[in-house]
View 1: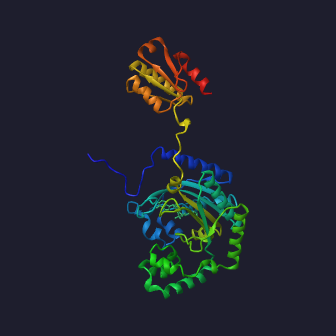
View 2: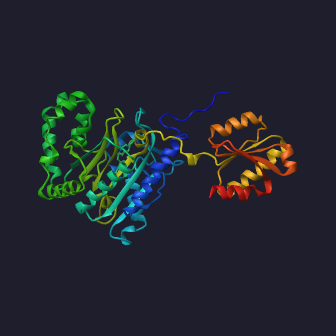
View 3: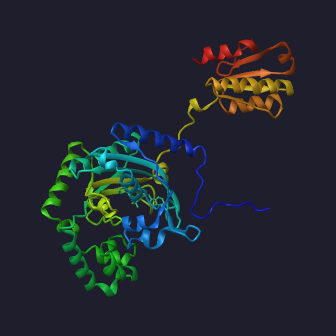
Length: 419
Ligand code: HAM
């Protein structure tokens, strides 16, 4: 019979890759906690309306990438394509804004977007998502970026480029929008079909078009940075000054518009040269109206999300950690000995000792081979005779020395050495 394979764009994360993921998550957990963040767990499924309103009707995500379905015909539900809208939904639903004036949250988990799968782009992918809800002080922007860069540094990542931009506010963005629409109307015939449509729906999205001809035209387009108002300019300068204070290298990318509609003012991405086309390992920015747009009070927010698969791809596979090897391997020959191995190995595991054994009754030679391969520190060899005499051979695999040991004393001896 044929095996059933995973759905296209959905992939398994296997060991030892999972160890790397655990390491990333632990590092994230430690760094974020020091910066005052708490973990939040949110559902994988939300009402479709949340993402329509949160992310924006005319974004690629909402227009064509969401996994939306009717729940047995009752209600339109969607597998979350990102976490920000859900975090804010939870923040409002549980009135977390009444608890503290600044709320710092992070969450790690899978997101779903029906994009065309390729290297670094999947239909189910994991994000480390971080959000700060509270006042719009530029120090918050700088602090968040600072923490992010510190986290990447803790993971030992080099050669990353931090790009920042300001997307302006409700005051200045309409003027820019007008200017860009005017510019695009003048070159409309040369633009691709998508970009022509975007003039009417979401003109800023043209900056993200991958069609070469559009790219050439758009490189001549007006820049958002030249339109930002005095307040937005000041906010941006304040962020820049604080990044400089901490010697964080960055470049200003005036063409960065981000793929979600909720952003205002500071936006940022971190890119790498080593991943080919999917070079953005994370993206984020400020959203000063999203909380209000989702029915809440006038509270600002800023956050980012890191693509876990892309981040993990940048971290070299670790040498096998000696702590991952068993402390003891019990090689047992004969049914009674295997039973003894079952008993001893599980007793020791319950006391925190990593033990491997083998119930297959394979030859001593092949069991010793396996102990060697697993890099076990010690091996206990038990045969039928040893069981009846209540003793076994205890071998130190590093020094190759061995001695007889009473099985009654085994637990105590192991606990003493392991300490
Ligand atoms: P985003 O730019 O859509 O932002 O996604 C953030 C990161 O998720 C990307 O930079 C990328 O590393 C990863 N990613 C996105 N799509 C895929 C995919 N199909 N396959 C693999 N990785 C992918 C957001 O999602 C915002 N919610 C970020 C944010 C949080 N802004 C404010 N707060």
